[in-house]
Amino acid sequence: GPRTRKVKRREKKADEKRPRTAFSASQLQRLKQEFQQSNYLTEQRRRTLAKELTLSESQIKIWFQNKRAKIKKASGLKNDLARQLMAQGLYNHSTVPLDSDNLDMKLMNGQNASGDCSRSDYTSDSDGDSLTH
Image 1 (cartoon, rainbow, N blue to C red):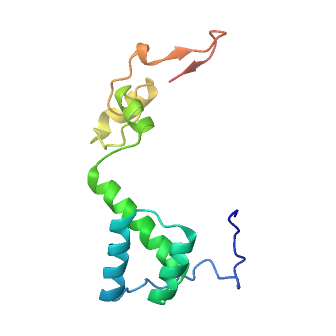
Image 2: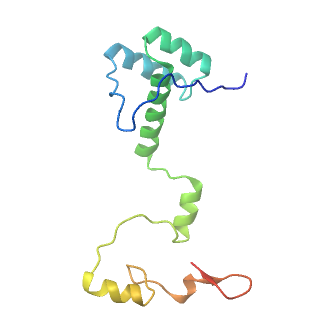
Image 3: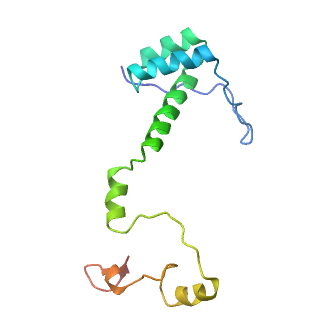
C-alpha cells in the first residue's frame, strides 16, 4: 500500500543530535550480505531485518542510503545533468587560486575570478534587453 509517515514521538532541541550508531560485527556482516542481494530494501524486508538485528527501521534505511552513497562516490560517476553542464562549462566546482591584487579589478570589469569571461558566454533573452550567463 501507500507509504505513511510516522509522527515523531517527541520534539528534540535543534542542537540535540542522536549519537552515532555503532553496529556490531555480526550486524554489519548481515547488512552487507543483504546489500549484496539488493542495493534497495522493500519495506517488508527492512522491517524483518530491523527485528532480526534489533535495530530500528530508520537505522537500517540510513545504513543502506549511506552504503549506496559511498559506492556512488567511489565510482566517481556524476549524474547526467552534472555531466551535461560540465560539458558546457557551466558546472565546475573546482577551486582556482586568486591573485588578490587583480581580483577587485576583474570583478569591477565583470569578469569571473579566473578571468575567462568572454562576450560569447552571455545570451540575451527574447526582448534583447537583459543578459543572462
